[in-house]
Length: 73
Image (cartoon, rainbow, N blue to C red; front, side, top):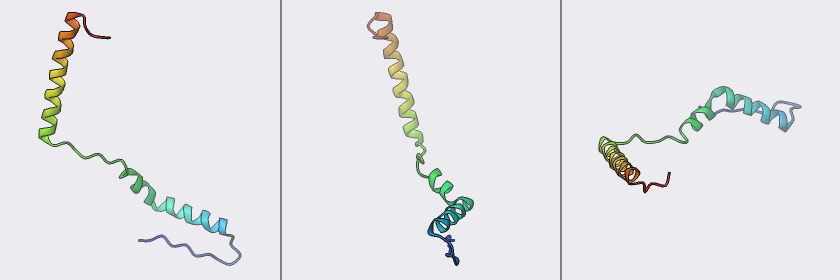
């Protein structure tokens, strides 16, 4: 449903804009738009498995380097 505001007699353009922005805030249109702005897709099961395997592989490699004293931390 579109938000519609008509200018009344003796109303300034600033007053009209203020009334319109107030109506937009009350309708919660902006909240819905902002919440969907940075929506992330959920990862598939296969991608989750791949990421977990990669983390495990890196963990083993870091531990090996730590034991050899070659890590930079």
